[in-house]
Amino acid sequence: MSHLLAVDVGWGTTLAVKTVIVLGIVPLTALLLGYIFLLKMMSHMQSRLGPMDPGGFHGWYQLIGDGIKFLQKEDIMPEEADRRVFALAPAVVVMSTFLVFVVIPAGPRMVVASLDSGPKVFDGVGVFYALAVSSLSVIGVLMAGWASSNKFALIGALRAAAQLIAYELPLVLAVVGVVVQAGTMSLQGIVSFQQNGEIFGWGGVGFPLILTQFVGFGLFMVATQAELTQPPFDMPVAESELVAGYMVEYTGFRFLFFFIGEFGTAFAFSALAATLFLGGWSIPWVHGTAADVLGPVVLVTKVLLVAFLMFWARFTYPRFREDQLQAIAWKWLIPIALLNILATGVLKVAF
Amino acid sequence: MKREIKGMLTGLGVTFKTMTQRAVTVQYPHEREDPAPRARGVIALKEENCTVCMLCARQCPDWCIYIEGHKEQRPPRREGAKPRNVSVLDRFDIDYALCMYCGICVEVCPFDALFWSPEYEYSEPRIAELLHDKDKLGEWMDTVPEPEPLEQGAEVKGKK
Figure 1: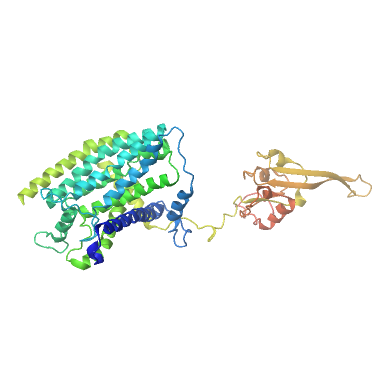
Figure 2: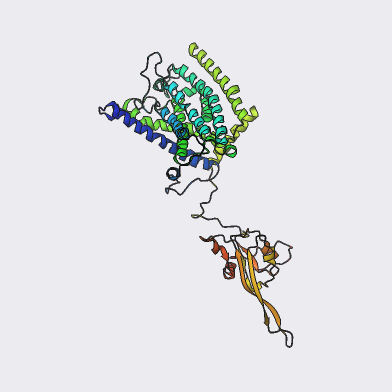
């Protein structure tokens, strides 16, 4: 960042600027995904228009207005709630979203902290860090469910915990294939591997890892869907049976936090998938300043592409039963992921 | 397993195809659909046909029709006959806040005094104003469409 600004500023100022940017970007991405996919794409997939009037042009103001509405609402807390935990839970959920954005590179130098300068044995821990902090949200969910003193909230939270833990494994194992092939855990390293790679000596499109890791990509998308507790994996927040699961007692801006967390995490996971499998911010043969400028645009384009797949499945499928959900994770996704790692390792050594 | 995967892909195809097609929504205040000619919008009253027989008020499941009337003596039609007793309508109100648009009153009226009109834009800010009196119900008569032409071989019946 400080290179881009071309001024020498102290680390405190840099940190403050970076924090403000991340704090601003997460709600913005949540709004972007919420508007494009939740309001508009879902509506058209159901042969309706969605909001059309707010803001004048196709209801672009609807979600912002909803956000303002949430800020005005009374902050209700159940009498028997564990007050501190109840108040802290949404912040924990949103925090895990914010922390993922720290390592996602949007350009050759545009990253809050790439975490590449650690001990050289690891050669960067970006992937590890991103996957680790993204699963922090389960703690927030459990806190919310427990502190609400509501049986629906508790059931929802326990379902969420069971589901998030079950799908954490395929998520991590799906990424291992990429890490093995690129030979690095640094996200910048994986991006540059894809940008400068060659397919049998031809480097026209670089070497997006989805070409060889398509199995991993599929697993990653399915596991992501479950991590976001989106349909078809929305047992924890099933409206028709649990009202809204662990969110049932939340109102006002705390509920807004959960909403931002949900869509911000959707964006973060899409960005992670785009970085790992589609080459992130990179276009082959574009380096230097051009890449600095084009990087964010390319990244957002790829993220929207991935998010489209994610939300497409979300708006198409009905909910899985709890046992089906666990069976898919343990009986299918994890064995397939292990086979994928094995095949990737063998081929890596062979070529 | 093959069947399930085929089903899931078909599902994705359906949603994608629907997304590319035009939405069926009509943006109501900006554009409006013409209701079907026999749409049950509002009930109109043709006052001169009404004999204050109260059949509609008694059949109404919601009891939303209020009728009051009195008898008047009119001169006889023929010379030397008894004067006629005629029922005169004083009040005929339909409370559209209660009406459930079942149409039984229209069906049951023996003298064709009630008609369906397709007009539907008569919402009010105050609920009491949904009580339409007989003048207002009479105004709706202008919006009652001509009856549909009868099917071939049907008995000629029903007039506006």
